[in-house]
Image (spheres, rainbow, N blue to C red):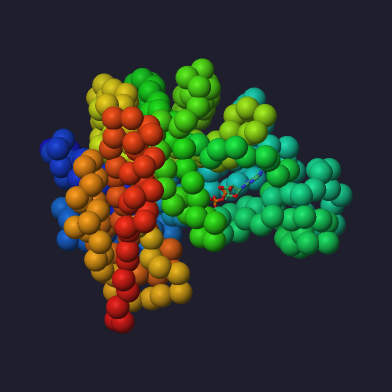
Length: 370
Ligand code: ADP
């Protein structure tokens, strides 16, 4: 039995616990919300702020390994845990780099990884890029928050930010790579995601991305080169833009399991969660290959409604062969909150797409007053 800690108690933590049980891990989770998806499931659930160094330090006492399921946490806390002999993955330096979109972009450019043309900009400085631009807050953004399309100079927000030229995107694709303590590296097949227009959250996705095999191999290669160059231990999810000109550009990456990787639970020989533990425990990494075409539909809180969610279409959905449901146990629905997901398996890509349409059509979330 190994003592491990996870910072963050959301659905990613919940699925890490599920995979950790198979390896007999003893799991302690830190989250500020007493009703988070990991509460009641973790061996030990500690309520406290993930943004406080002191809290993380205390939380990590007696742990062998410490990992994360979210990025907006205290890097200083991770450093203190490491100084006290805990194996911390991802390393605090990696997290500090990734928490800042500007630093992350500079690092990719300095190390030869492909990305859009960009500029780190402060109000008053001349713009060296061609409009339209995408303006991004340097820190704290997620699910498209802090990201703005800027058609002309007059519409720029007057704040230090990362500016990028607007890329002509054909597909948004992510590749999850893993690297173990002793340096073994593997990548899952690319996932192709379709985003909800208003919420900027993945609405549905399929694995593998519908692209020619050499393009798929290229994305996997870039992701594996990146995880090696960064020296990440654990998972690194690399979000790409595949452009209309057929180029792979890196958007950003996340050193943790990812919403787009849930499909690996049922479509791949090894899931992203099992792979994360294998990497951290320095076990051989698992086969990432597919045994079916896979899809995912996110179950999102309906727009404009707050309250207790219920899912009246579960029976209709589960009647479709190859469909399974995962509810995250969130007691409160807010607009576009991720409440669960539906996985879809199929023997052909065409049939998968048909089932995905059917699932999206049938899926219903009701919200009741608190
Ligand atoms: P977040 O970290 O909040 O998810 P992203 O940086 O991934 O934000 O941007 C959100 C979305 O904005 C992306 O999924 C993509 O659709 C769009 N986007 C971001 N950067 C660019 C770009 N340079 N060109 C075109 N679209 C972009």
